[in-house]
Image (cartoon, rainbow, N blue to C red; front, side, top):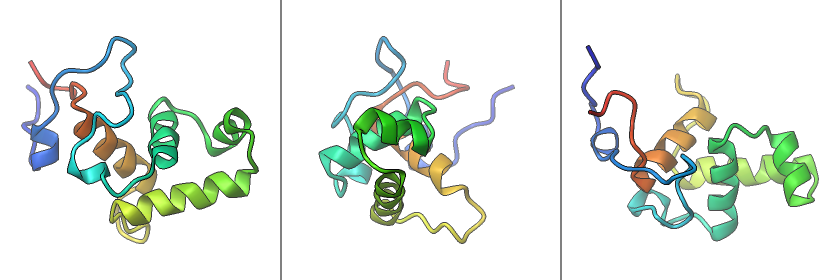
Length: 106
């Protein structure tokens, strides 16, 4: 039996795109603080890319990607010192805001 969503963003999950990855700027309020560049990095994170792979794809240094991810976490209000993995939480917010179907939806 699926676990019912407990937060508004979890309840907002619905349809996704044909490639399974939400498109840029399909988002709602949670992602408004992010730049186009940050959303693109977040989309790559959602596909499972490591920081190293993102750096190769974007043609930048690893330290640049690490700075961008830290900015994403900050702009989304994600505290890396809490019990939540910041990368997982950022991707979860991205997918929920983009309206991608969540596991357990019928």
